[in-house]
Picture 1 (cartoon, rainbow, N blue to C red):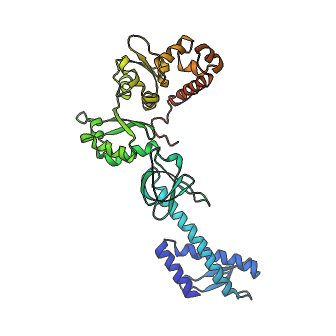
Picture 2 (cartoon, rainbow, N blue to C red):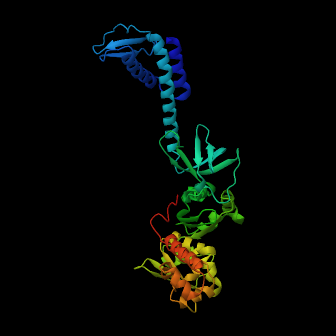
Picture 3 (cartoon, helix red, strand yellow):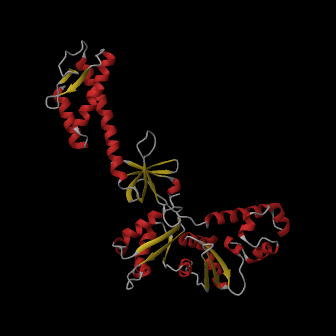
Length: 388
């Protein structure tokens, strides 16, 4: 048993990185507890293992050797040693994996699709497995067993039975940020700086970039020759569109840039309200708003303040931001619901009677208005990370 024990300890230290001293200490504590329970070992006697010979000794508090208990202690020692070693090695391996991957948190990792569990994907990362939850998948993601998948290592938790401690995300805003860093050397080297990112995962991402070097075009640098750099990132994101705009310390210029590809006629920034009002031509109105209001909503998140879009030559209804046509917008305005805020607070039954449309449709419009207000409320996190 002595030789077998020492060989086993040497093996785990050499191949698993679990120190021999840690294992011996664990064995001593475990054996002492077993002998107290099964052989009535006195409390003042401890089990000590010689690290050179593997001898198991019984030592009192004065350091004197005492006789082992009258019990088949060698057989018990072998059985207990095996159980303790297995338990401690598993714990040590989990701790080692936790420490290794904790350092990689918020970095991009690649793994192989191992299996599927209720819509979630279990990904093999070599030494361990990670979970790619369904809510962190992009809408167009389609993976099969054996596929290589790339994502942001979002969170590493302490090992817990039945729970995957490592979570991967493909929807986190920082996933795009890290892809940009990996793809564009000028960002890695600090020549170009990412100032802000706003994202609707799977649909559209806006990135604001800046360079203090007047000879460097930050937008062109990120897009690359024939848009090669940005296309590589879009391909990894399943076709999600990425728009790169120039950051500017002037809030009016930054607002105009953030609303690209729309051409803005005029911008007025109100510092007291932290709000920008923009005017665009009739032709550019829907470009500024974007499909389902995505362009202006992302622009709000990117700049960090509210943006009101008006039509040059006559105020355009803000209700157009909800993706409705001008005819319905005019009806709502004439009924006294000319702003999104007023629409969000409307009584569905009253509004249905005033406008002459079904109440179910009115309820859907009110819900859309409420969501719009929630989505366009800029906060401190909008320009950093959106991991939800």
